[in-house]
Length: 605
Ligand SMILES: [Zn+2]
Image (cartoon, rainbow, N blue to C red; front, side):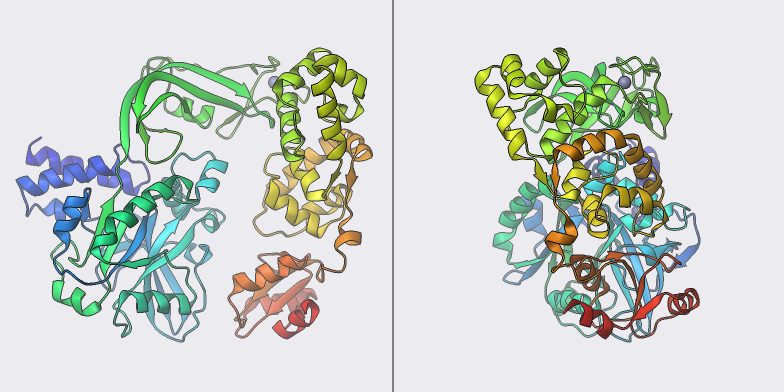
């Protein structure tokens, strides 16, 4: 590629990357940059680090350079210019860089990194998880860090790439509803405040109330060891990382090394390698899950990726298939970056013969679109029933009752819905699945009849009603009837429209719930845990308290209370610390009970 084309390509891919829409992998991008560096070291494109700015511009007080990258141990060693000195090493979070500004310890604004000189204002920046509104110190300060989204959350909303999702959530004009799922981890205090080492700086960040990136102090001989350790940990982490960052610990050495036009010379990013391969779609199979969502799987021409042969790729949902026009013959670029399941990086050749099913593969009911998902709305759908039965068995930890036994009982007409498994007699189990296995299944079902309310709720397999939410609801209410009656009119942190959907699903399943309830022994929260649960009702916190807000929230939840994000007439208590503003006024107006931190502690201790 000539210089002209190379620079254009770099510009184009850089913009795609910052829009959360990359077409090539990071390593390929770095490859383009390196080629241009070789051909034309002073090319102006190399100086424009970052993305062109589109929203409200924010000029950074201190220009933010990017990090130089290496891809091999050899190149890493070449970077070491001063030997025998400690290095601080931390995982390179794969999110987007955010700059926070505080005046006299109060949050002023959050901005994206942009091109390093000018960033973009993040409209709902103060709602980012882990961004304190008031610091533990009354100072003017600028903090840099990474905004990340957990893999779990990305998966729950069907996003293939958490980083792209983080970029999307930050830019979304939705009143800040999405941005709460972005977590801020601090890694730099701009221009320092007299710290002599990186470690002191990290300590200072923690004291100010920030979550910091994990870090280790090492010398260069341990670098390969720690790099490998994190590369191995990578697939099991809840967030994406794409390499390791190494910095000299002492600020005096950082000053001696200085920086060039593009990079500080005292820090380096050593990137993990990821493997990519091109293949073609040979088939699209799909099945209906427990909530009726039809999930497509792409069958591809077998290709080797990171040592394993890959034949199936998940496509999240049919919206993805429709949007990308994926059909038989479509050429895809796959990447496996430490993850167990390879994902589609981009469509390299679209064939345009995309096929979207019209009917449920299990019951032939006409499918309906719900956002990016195709849904079977038939409550009698056998695939949904089978998936619900399997889910119940998993959540109740019933043993021996596998798909083969379930299918035999379904085919014989005994098992039609979850509650049937409690009605089937020992003789029938023995007759259908054999004496030995039949008895084992029957015994396990009998043994697992005692459960907690939250376990019962989770086992129902209702969309969005997982472990965490079930626990939260069962702490607040004592029965499913109470939940159905009260949930919609209660303010619960993090629950918007899903409240209504959950209530609707519980009502739809109510007859079955009654049947199940008559068979099971659900532990009564109040009787069993009455002495432990000191709080009830929902609590909102405002102002500055003696411990970080998260700790107080956790304490309230542990003691049986729930957390609300705003003050409304449905709020039970407002816990007010120092310097609280509008929330306190509103609570007083609405007659909400206001507690001081001391009042709260008296109730708990
Ligand atoms: Zn169906």
